[in-house]
Image 1 (cartoon, rainbow, N blue to C red):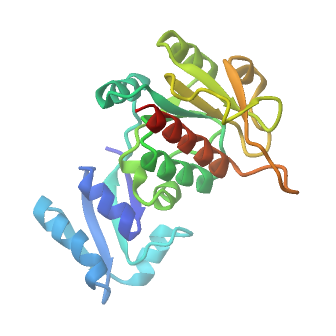
Image 2 (image 1 turned 45 degrees about the horizontal axis):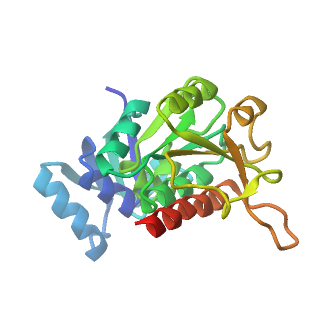
Length: 247
């Protein structure tokens, strides 16, 4: 079985709570303070081995990812199928709300988007299999554990995935820098998938043409754009606002 590692207090604790397969946990020597107690207690309840290790060893394993003195060896992340995202929506009793990411490259953007998606109650995220960042340890750390709760599907062909979602009754809203209706005029109460473009190129031509409508954030300052995670967060919580107003 393929194995990976996750680092940081929140990512490890959320992996434990979510039932992720964890083989072993390492905690840096002399760091078993109050912050580590929930991890130690949950690991003990689940029968997972917890060992002490030199902080230097943990730093070597985690590399650029800040580990906060704890690392877990886990089974490789299992990506969801598209039907699982739609099934989650059906179980929630709310219209589907899914995020489509068109070749995002920055792990900070993906991690932040997953964290916001979990808070906003999105039913899942779809990323491409190629030319895009996946669920790396850095993404898991930045998501603050949200990666354990938000199903992420991978699409071999994002355009075909859009067609499948349309067949299932979803409307596709593409986030555009200009040329779309403002997000406040768009109807986000319908079964919906929001398409977010690449950090530098925006939406690809093919997927943009498949959108049912484009939405634009009104920009009143001197800087004419937001990064992908900020724009996605604003759009996701506009979905929340509109749907709460209807209930």
